Length: 375
Image (tube, rainbow, N blue to C red; front, side, top):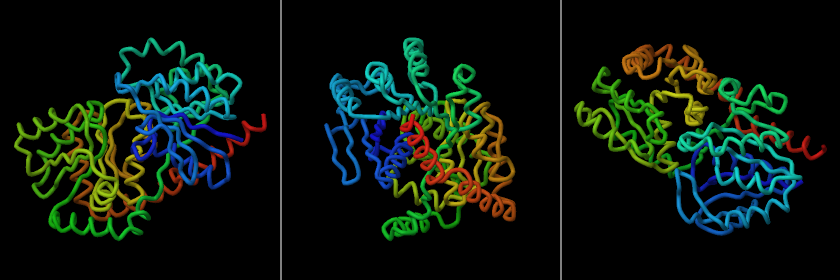
């Protein structure tokens, strides 16, 4: 059995979809399954001791999508040698590649989210989406909540399976690294007498970071808001901070290293994701925070997977979208009730272990591949 993961990017480019794909591939390798990856990057081919990655350098980026003609030629060759294609969507070039070359192959469409940044030209892709969904053997959605937001659900519900996203236990990675611990001690000494509310994600409008910034105005001076990530909203968020004189309360870190991310997950008191639309399909950063037993503050987004991840008044609080006063109130309630904060911290880790470990996710995909291979 030969499995190909078709994904827009792959580590060392870090992101939710990238990490999910790598986790599955690593697991398949351990199970002695022949696995390879086709992705965009800056080398034509990377040979790992684990498995092969075909990485195509893009000619240019259009609407956040890397474009390359070479990608089609490599895809045709690699897919010919493949039994099962695991296609991580959204990925426009991957969509066309599957449309052209996936006939006679087992096809899994892993629908992480709807198209977001290319939504204004999405009508061009709809017919191809429909053809591939018809052709697919299995459609994977990442939560029961998000399935309600999947416009093709009723058409293809017999093909649909729910497999939650996962994260490795990053707290274990933290505990094993002397280098990261040293970095953490430095961070801790710089913030001895303050509470830290940490958030991470692309600086785009639907992430709702401006409402978290506004919430900081209502919080005590010893509460710091720390936001990691880069994106098109950077200057707007900087202006928001400056106009409200919040330079000493809100800190934009920009793009940070993986080790720095682990340090902030360890140091923070609460992890907050203030997203404002169902473009936030799951929020993998939430389960990363749960590995460190962190209480969560999220927003109530209809049909988003984050509603499944965070259970109100159990693992944290949920507040209405675009409501900075409610955000501030939830942070205040969390920080000022030590008994409840401790209980939410315990519940957060327990929920991670029950639903979101990599072992749970990877076993489900491994079993799925074996079933498809037997058909």
